[in-house]
Image (cartoon, rainbow, N blue to C red; front, side, top):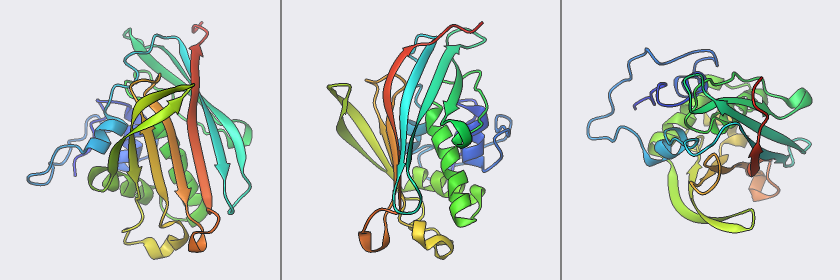
Amino acid sequence: MPLISARVLMPALLSALLLGAGLAARAADAPAPAAPSGAQDFSRAERLLFMTPQLRGIKPPTKLRYRFRRSGSLEAGFEDSVDLVLTRAPAGGCCAARTDFLSGERRLNLPDMPEAEGNPVTLYFLERDVREMQRLTRGSQAHFRKQIRMVAYNGATVRDIAWHYRGKTVAAQEVTLKPYLDDPNRPRFEAHARKEYRFVLSDAVPGGLIAIRTRTPGVEDKAPLLVEELELEGSEPAPAAP
């Protein structure tokens, strides 16, 4: 299975997700293994999620605003916000990225990205997700990253859909992953084995990412164990950097 080059998008978090390293690790100088014989270098899901220059049309400084919701029978729910501030990159153009991912005690400390082409909110969401999976199951973050990577490569479902955004219907692509259904370690966290990840992407919205939703079904498909949703609310000019 190929690795997505860290030079293509977001070095710190991309290497963390796709190499199972820490947030500070970089994969830029690591040779990628060859793809299996006859296989494509990257799946359509990988290209949509990690390799599309979603920030290309952004005019910095811009702030993208997302709403985050958590619900389900496992733990108390909450609502919070995610802000992505995009400014001019050191070399010019867009974008340098800084995020406020949730607030207060829930705030996720994440590195700024001096040069981002794809929307880093996808990787920020996934980084938080694997940390939560570790907390809930005592499993390995590296293992959960690996399962997400593997299923994005050879087990994702991609379909074209329509989505309502700010009163308009836009064309979008929905990427669905079920990383733990065939996980050999499934018995260790059976309650979370049917967890589903859904990503909605569109060139018609700022930043290219409309929504991410994860859903962990409950026992006998009763109330969901856990649902987490992130959805784009809109964009606005951001204060210029001092």
